Amino acid sequence: MSRILLSFGILTALSCGLFAQVKTESILGFPVTKQKLVQVLKSKQLDEPEIVATIKTNGVNFQLTPAVERELKTSRATSRVIAAVRQNYRITMVGIANGKATNLVTPTYPPAAKAVRVFGTVNVLVVIDEEGQVIDARAISGHPLLKQSAEKAALASTFIPTTLSKQKVKVTGIIVYNFVE
Image (cartoon, rainbow, N blue to C red; front, top):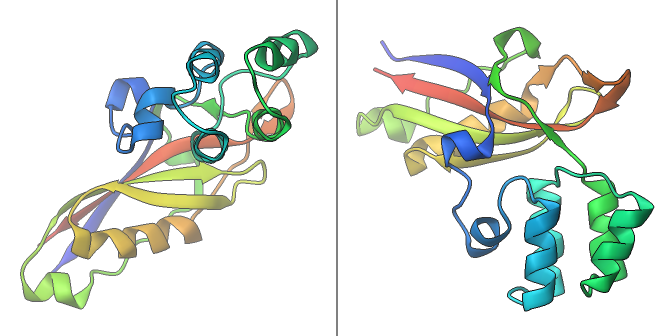
């Protein structure tokens, strides 16, 4: 009988090393830091659409104060980059957070994966909004036959909202699904 074991862990990107899968993510980092963004803007390593897309996916770990906005503009940041920074400030938590899930959905074991006896771990990068809803899920490792099911389950999961200084904040983390025979 097949079963799925799951655990939820919110990890920093630096400690797990799972996020540098595409060019922009490896250049800007996860989450995007102010220093890296300024460096990329000045060096013109990436164009505006790549920078904005990466900020929307990875978030930034700094708030857009007037001084930071001036620094970004001095570094050639466009209004779209500034808007992306303003809208995508995220806190990445550290540690295991099983107790944060109010509904951690178990993925179905895909029949095609069962037929060829595929099993293993799928790590799903999730973005959890201020209300505890998963608003983005992307399998970043694992067997291709298992990824879609894990992403679908992650998107249906809900969490206790995270607060910082009495304000609800968006967070990024990893849900680990272990598909076992």
